[in-house]
Image (cartoon, rainbow, N blue to C red):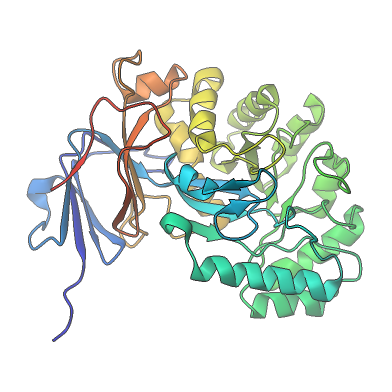
Length: 390
């Protein structure tokens, strides 16, 4: 006998956020997922909801794609030696994060900088997080930091072994644009996506990466365009927004004023689709389980972006820039969802108005690949309404 597909039905949804800037709000009150993939969405009366394996009554709350953190620095499992903290990924799950992208495992004690060692670390880390998903969170890791002496063959070997990311360019010994550009081009040739450190130094051994270096290197993502930690001068941030077709990454651990500048510039240039969000943690600033939610609320409140669009920065925009199968309410995409509501007693007539005033929502449930991974969040303020597993 063949096993029946797992069918998840989420009904009684009050508001569906799509993750798509072009149409951030969808008309519907129900989502159906089969075997961890979105099957259909719309009005429950129009959908096939029979023979469900699991049913969630959303109780009128908002459903959005699971949030994506485009910039983290994992090491091993759910532990970070930088902050001596266990379960930081699980804490991020409680902040609505379902996917994380490594910008390099630079905080690994004794991180090897020889070519054989850095390749071995990248491959091992990629395998570890492929085989082990802390609390179900998808951690795309194994991001080597480029060093002098790497050849095209090294990038071919890394790609063949399953590595798909480069760590932040500039955190290793390669600090000139010409050399970095050659290695970024080799990486791109073999399907490896690249990110560059932007701004002042963040760890010993790193240095200033200015706009000229960013433009010459030509990475796929301009990492923390608002600085990690210190930002570039305003004119250089404006220049990068103007001249880059890459992802323009704004992070929690950067300069908030520069974040709003980058957002406003991108909007004026018609480039809001390039804005993506990260935390840049764990780092010297600590671990930020609610960092992405805080960025959504901050950019909406101080950047004047409607909350439903600000959520797109942390979902569909990042999914498109990072070539992920999640982040959008779309048939065939991963069934990764966050169910949330206006925080109890928070101002605003509804969740979107409340977030646009700078308030965090309350998370009532997080679902990854069609499986409930956490119920009421232990980290967000309490939600006015809570979804229930029927």
